[in-house]
Length: 399
Image (cartoon, rainbow, N blue to C red; front, side, top):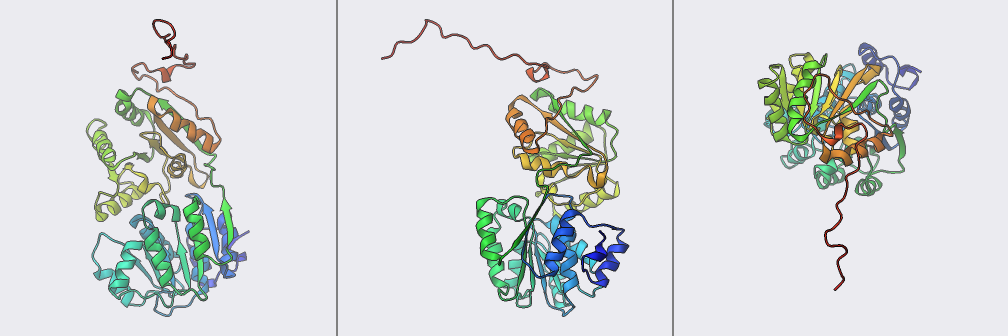
């Protein structure tokens, strides 16, 4: 089934063809007809399944330019907002619909100008959008389609009160609301019931990881984590590799370690403490190949469209098993092969088990050849159970 069977407008179909896409992904095939019908939709889909096109293509097909915001898309991070705005521009280039991108960390001038020049599509982060409302540069009375993307991420980041305010600012009568979230904790279920009208749900492989990805845990003592990371990079024939850390400080330390000890100048860090300009530069440089290694926190794991990543390395086992799936979603895309390596220390065994349960897959434990390991029980093929010492002096008398 091709895109031409879904009911999209000729202008949007032309852009899809120019983008080189032949057949819709499962979430696109299910969501697009429902959105074109005007239904409210709850979509659950992991990174890399074509979710943005699933809501962008039909939304763009339904509207004509009027020079006022008709489509409003909320994203949790600047990077996601930038990426989604680019997609709307690409798919809508023959429709005449103009796109404005609003996010914090930069000045208001260019954003206000884009709104004044007649934006039909606004892609924004919640905080900056509210700021534009108070500045009277953003008006909501013509919004027909409201798209809430990565809602669970917005909840994690504390944006839900602002999002609720924005929903109230949009017209309720005749508004179509599209709601996308990888997970649906109770707070989000309640929120969805409040802002959606008779929604239909579309769920695609929430726990699945690409079958073309090879997974491996690399057990190591805590003192050798850095050494093993450098050895893995040295012995791995990678095209491009993303290394995920838990904290921003850790990302900076790993980046400097690779530059200094790994003698790899083509490495960049990406996290929320880095300026917006430098974050976008790091992302663009990684996509173009100027950087071969990108060290990032989970800000880069959710939704960022980076194709061609040959390897993902978890510097630590993610504390949340779902984060593993989102991180690994950076490789093995579009049926390409990929590798997912995770450094594993003794204090992370429970997290490792949680990952295996979540993805319903046993992950092989591997040793790196020619690496001088410090002994840890994790390296034993069948580690023996610890022997508990008997208390001295026999049983204690009860008092």
